[in-house]
Image (tube, rainbow, N blue to C red; front, side, top):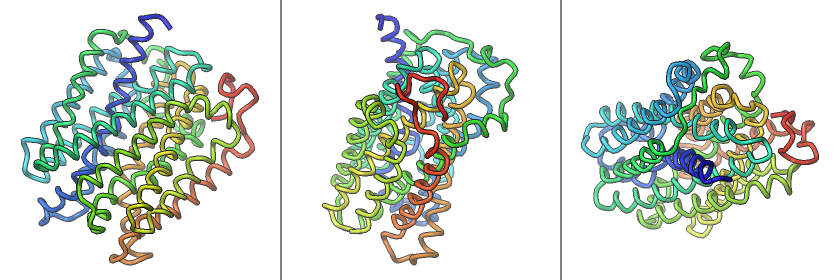
Length: 396
């Protein structure tokens, strides 16, 4: 790689660093925020984590149209500036409904950033490099989670609203975009495309549905863990430490994802559902040791699952991935985050009772089995060809 391409790659990866923070960054403070807004329904407090997802989805649906009228630098800068303003702006607010509005604007910002953070890797780099780069992108995503979770936990110990100051980290990416991001016109590569084409969803449905299930399962963790752990008499510091540990594990897995995909090309499609399953089984034993072990398994599952789905879809989508499959995967990722508490909460209460602290994790186990079945039905007969991800004609 040349110096220029290293700078471009670093800039793209800096955007990957920020996207996970849309929801998960304030997860360690969720218990404190719930106490502060005790008069508000608990679902509204959970929506502080998940409501950005709805507006990310809406923005992703318009991304192809946006990319026709604006170049990559303008899109990235608009997204990043909104990210900083809406994210850190919550520090000045003490009204749950105004917070939700700002979180919605944060969702719009991530909806602009997310397709670029993965799609530009497919735009600039050949298929044989994409497994490694998607692994790095996922690793940066998790590193963002480590930094944001750690800082948010420390800041929340001062007061809950301080946790939102972590979004000022977006200013670093603003500087990098101004200095190094090339000003491409992505929409021109796909002029005939519409804002949303059903045939694209049909073409990439294994990855899109897989991402939806993966995020529904994963988001059981940030929307429930802090509250469950606090009932188990764990301090904010311990809760933050466990959450950071999960992100560290996912980060390390992302760094070696290229080698994992090459070595386990036939089996790797099953890694995410199986590791999620084991992790949530561990969570059903409300004990510090089991919570730590379960978090490690969930970190591995997330660290493998996201780059796997991004890699195989981006290779099939080719250079147009930023305006075709990546918005679909981004929409599925955040749709999973948004609907997770809507699906898991009622099912947990209905199947296992409102008083069962482990009920959300039992529902997650059921979803893991559904995910495992989906992987088998859509990918069992379409293993990666010999040579791994170098082949561009592989099934997504």
